[in-house]
Length: 237
Image (cartoon, rainbow, N blue to C red; front, side):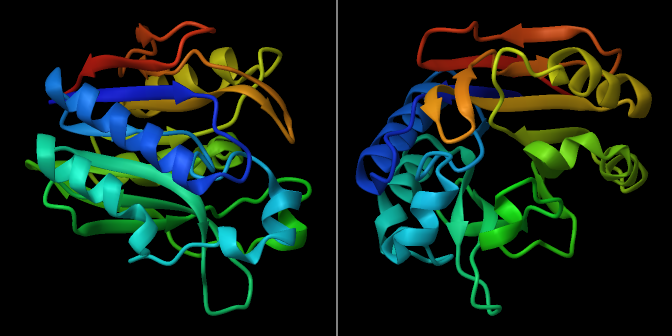
């Protein structure tokens, strides 16, 4: 199976613009054979926790009609997409949520970030369950940024028969995760690890790109570099 790891600079608070970019990248990656397309943390709004707190209209629902261009793109190229944004919960606070949209446009899975970081704790609800979905006989785990600092998530993914661990993150150039987290999770637990990251300024700093993948031996399989919007492909399984 071919998986695409994406990177782009979201427009802060502009859901429509970000949805268009996500849909365009799904169509482009699917045209090159990608069956799963992985995006960064809060790609639908930008990593802007304070803006999300002050703008209730940015909070999505699982079946939000504003995501229809994403569903259409998945159907058009028969690809699944892992897209992340603030999604309503029954607690009164949104979660930092990965919605896995299937090749037919349906919702395959929902994962709410379990380990919130810094200011996120003031405005988001933490998740309570691990993220899983199966496509074409392969089992996938999902995790979001700070989650990846906790090796037990990857350990449970491996124990649960997952082949790939999909990480939606927001990382700056000085983040050590490229050396001490993603390749280590891959090597320690025999997983393919696929990272979606951001470019551009956000509330946490400046995204450095370098979206890509690591193989089960911890070696880099693909690296999108640090400047260009787009995606890289990696074969797994």
